[in-house]
Length: 343
Image (cartoon, rainbow, N blue to C red; front, side, top):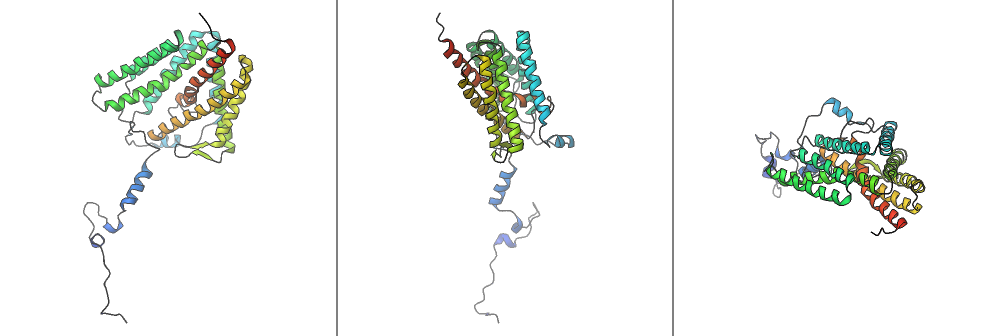
């Protein structure tokens, strides 16, 4: 029996009984809440977001979707690294100007790859200034030294600022374009020019080959240990395949190669431990930084120049970060061995 005297009909909100709206054709009851909308928006975001890189949506072809699948080939990647090491080493020992030219070509190729990677964004890099300034930065490092390299870097950044303010794209998000241009100059030409300082100022040309060997050992150790022993992810939101076991392998291999190289270089072995650990750490930071950029851009590799590894910038990311650290450590080691040079 229903108590008709105390019966209360169920209450419905106006939204729950209103008909489907003509704009959406969806009944309001079935619409997601504001919290669900925010959660869906967060899921659609890639990575952590780089504010000055706004990617325009582009259709993905079948060939691009296939190229994004699968990992790197160990044999091909190691072979490419060893081949680059041999090319830099032979030119450095046999014809030094050819080594400088090879480094300049590498810097320009990395700049072109980066420009190609951001082609779907609404940012303008100012390639003429960045390329010409990047070449000048390396030449100053090779011919004069650190002070001239720093001066050339500042002048290039100032020229990039003027280009963005008075160039063909002036007024179109100039501040963000200036930020991108200056960071590109600092990331590729400036850091890459420390290879010239290693070859010229750190005792012998073998120093640059030594640093490249440690970097290759670190990358190889990280790949092997991460591939076969990796269980604990380091930063899944940035690089899902980067693991703490791989990082430990990078440190182990880098320290091994570095300590072995100290006997060849004639410096105390404990500098090899310091150098190996620091290069593994900053190399990993370089890998994660580039992974963050690639995730934000929606690409797997910066290019396709090197088989089994991607682009040239994918191979050089750890070297770019490790070269300044190696320069500081080796300069201090050589200074402590030789003592101050008085004029």
